[in-house]
Length: 268
Ligand SMILES: [Zn+2]
Image (cartoon, rainbow, N blue to C red; front, side, top):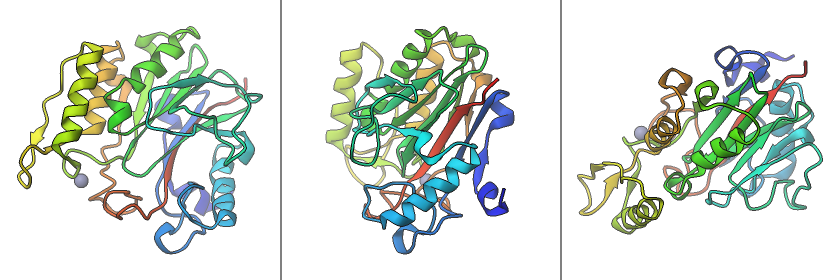
């Protein structure tokens, strides 16, 4: 396998333990140009489709699967999760599973992927039960229970909270993610509807009513309430906005690529 394919993945195989292979990409190691330089994995961002196809082939190779065997959700900022297999129908456009932000599988023939450029990509595994999952958590998903829903679906496939390991990938963090008062109000409503306490966020020093929302922290705290052990949560602690080497929707004013989180169970 070529060196360039291996070096640009934050590889998490060791941390998850066999038979899991997993990692997070950054923006290096691909063929896209301009704002998408270079490992853009999103089709929906106006990059050249041929380039994205090559980039996707490269990341699929990192996990030793075919490009068509890496399943992504459509990612609509909701909290719906699909349990999938290799045979699950894909949407015609871009080959994604329609209308979900989370995927769960026990199928060792496929890898699961999640795209992000500030939103939180999360990877889940109970290696003992042979169940894996991914989630895409922007503020809407994070405050409406996408993380809980992935765990719930995994428990339905005989995962146990005390065995589940979760990796929280590169995302915009409390240092950079200022959200305005209407977003704070929407988040409060979502928490009230779920009967959960609203997290405390640092106030913005720039705008009245705005806060610095910490998306990875929201996900982390939710995992703890679900019974996932502290030592089973790995936060890569990378801010996509203020640290180099990652796509950031906010910093790049919407014209940017997507990095990915990827996970699979190897065959036994
Ligand atoms: Zn930052």
